[in-house]
Length: 375
Image (tube, rainbow, N blue to C red; front, side):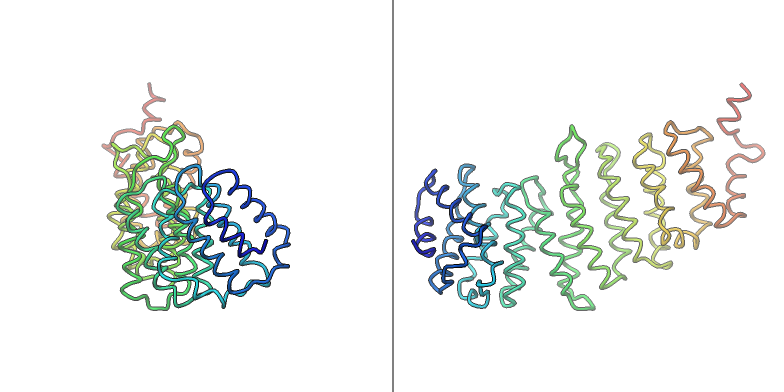
């Protein structure tokens, strides 16, 4: 039976073992390369795209494996030399792309997410006229996720799809590009929900790496947007009552990456919000957020930035770093703190000496370790 006939038959077949078996046999032909012996005729392409369109509408747990199989067959066929993408554009009407987008509504299982990503990237890479609609569909899905993120939404794969799209943006960024940053990407930090509370996995952790990648690509094209990004990201730190340490650690790491695009003047405007969060985290009883902040001084670009503002940084951070002279319970934190104190002192010895005198000079409370020795 010719492949076109098989595509047509499977598209009309009911859910069941028979349809699944036919799909598995067809996928095996693609994997082995035997499908290359067939003629990739206009009818072949028409029935292939029609099958995929029908499969996009298959819903329910029982149909999931069949959907994935159809998508794998299609992607496998696009990689063989005989497949001519130039002959496919007429098979990609708007409703076909909207049907693909419907798979991002939260009903697709995570196993399908990479396939959805690859389908989007294939269409985007080969058909420039379809790119505006694809950008709009991805933007709509991400905008929806920014308002209500749930673990069934394929945010990570959509952001992966977005990265090569951002690569193609011209500079300077347009108002539409800036809207992508401010109205879609940055609000994705908002969720304080848990993916798995018992494993301390925050929901934002599902897609944070891809999210940061998109933001950094935009900042590479327009670094002047970085201070605003840092400010907004810092506003999404969880409050104390929300107790989401893993998210705090993710955001601190992200801030360290965003600061690569901030100059000295930009840092001046950020110091109030940045220092407020740093002091709060350094005062934690949890070692993880403290270590993540102390990691700032292992980043050369941050160290160089901080050297410009010793008068603002040292007096503010010193009390939080010294903790009244009481050693922290975690030895690693104590070692890292010592190294940071050394770097702060080296940045401006006079400001450091003055701040230390204000803390423990004549007439001030004695450090905890000295009081303990005296007792």
